[in-house]
Amino acid sequence: MIRPVEYKDVEACISLGFLMHQESHYQFLDYDALKIAELIERSQTNPESVCIFVAEKNEEIIGFFVGLKAEYWFGRDTMTCDLVLYVKPEHRGCSAAPRLVKAYEKWASKLGVKEINIGTSTDVNSERTIGLYKRLGYSTASYSFRKRA
Image (cartoon, rainbow, N blue to C red; front, side, top):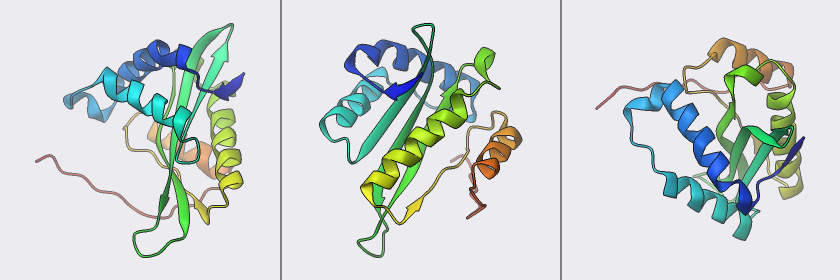
């Protein structure tokens, strides 16, 4: 089941976020549980700027998605972008990830944005994630580069 996050999900989302953090490229950076709680709060008080959806199986949260609405830097038109899509390793390959993306797309469409953006930067199953996004109708829009300071 895919549903919007609720306050009762804070601890589960903090735990899942930590799992993603530890599995990903970002493990060298700090992890702040309070920031996750604040993001959930923001999704509740301003649902037109932040969406968070969770995937549940047998009443256990097995994955989550966070998306944001923003204006383009050069004009007032809006778009959405993702912050994270994460599904526990033992549940990958089921329908949770595509269903989380579909929930994000539905949220974005209701907002009347011009584009829906999604990407991958964690270095976790990148090729598989790219394949999922292409199957869902996304095309390559940019390239991203990084270098540690």
